[in-house]
Each structure stands twice: as structure tokens, then as C-alpha cells.
Amino acid sequence: MKLEKELKLNPENTLLLVIDVQRDFLETMQGFVFQDAGDKPGNMQEIVRDNLVPLIERSLKAETHVAYVKSEYPRGRFPPPYDRLCSKSPGQDLYLIDKVNGSVKVFVKNEPNPFSNVGLGAYIEDKDIMSLVVSGVTLTSCVDTAIKSAICIPNLEIIVPEDCIGYRKKREEDARKILDGYRSMDKKRIKVVNSSQILYST
Image 1 (cartoon, rainbow, N blue to C red):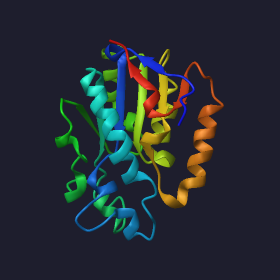
Image 2: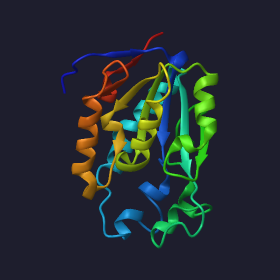
Image 3: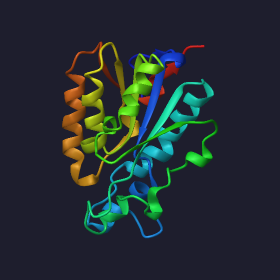
């Protein structure tokens, strides 16, 4: 893929946000949760393995701020097999977090929107974050709500690495429409890129 333009970010004021990259969403002993519900995982496992993990590793190496957002929905919120997305289920472990060198900040949410945890917004303000790189699953739900909330934060540049965002197979058309919508927004506030375009200044 020919890159249109490299995007150089300052690691001191950049936050890589990793949303819902948990075993419940990607791989569990019982099988993939959406697959059990008659759906297919789409590109979720592929984007995490091939694209997102390398981006996390590069970000940590550059000493960029990295934060995981973890879903812990209340018991009874969903019927089986979606109940595996609930608090204290075996699949609540953050996928590959133990294999990624470095330390990350972890925020817990019990609503689809990651900013329902007010600590996330406070962290962005406290660290003087100017660039927010949004990644994870799923684009048509939690990722989209995060981006729409982040747009409301003044002077925050939002980076969307489309190859690091997963979605369910049956929502593929919706996902493409959402990405097209981001591309039509103010390019000074939101940029849709490939993760290989993201570079950190030293």
C-alpha cells in the first residue's frame, strides 16, 4: 500500500486508546462470542494480531501513552451467549496485554461508550493529550461512540487507524459508511489513516 502521507505524532502528548480487546470478543475457550450467536468475527482477530499489536508495541517503544478500555457489563445485561461479555466472566482478560512489553493504563466501562468512565476524560486532560489514536472493537458500537465523544473535547486531534479497528462481519457495510463519514469530517480534527502511516517523533 502506498502511503499518502506520514503522520508524525509527539509521544509525550499522544494517547493510543485500545477498546475492548478482550478474550470475550476475540478468542475464548468456548469459542468466539459473536460466532456462537450465529455471526462471524469479521476482521477482529486479524486486525488485532497483524496490525494492532505491532502498533501497541511501537507506541510503547516510543514511550507513548497507551490506555486499554475494558468492558465489564452488569450480570443480566445480555442473554446467552452474550452474557460472556459481563463482569467476572472467564473471557474478561485483556487480549495479549501480558505479551506486550511496557505498562498501560486500564479503564473499566459498564456502558458501550468508553467515556462513560469519567476517568478517561480526566486522564486525557491531566496528561495534556493533543492527539488521540482510537483502536479496538467494534467500530459500529463502542469505537464509534468513543470517537463521537472525543470530538467534543476541544483541541483534540483524533486519529483513526482503519486497519486497527474491528467489526462484525454482518456489520461490514455499516462499518464502511462510518469510516466514510469520518473522512468527510474536519480533517484538522479527525484523520482516517493506515497504522503504518503513524510515526512518533523523537
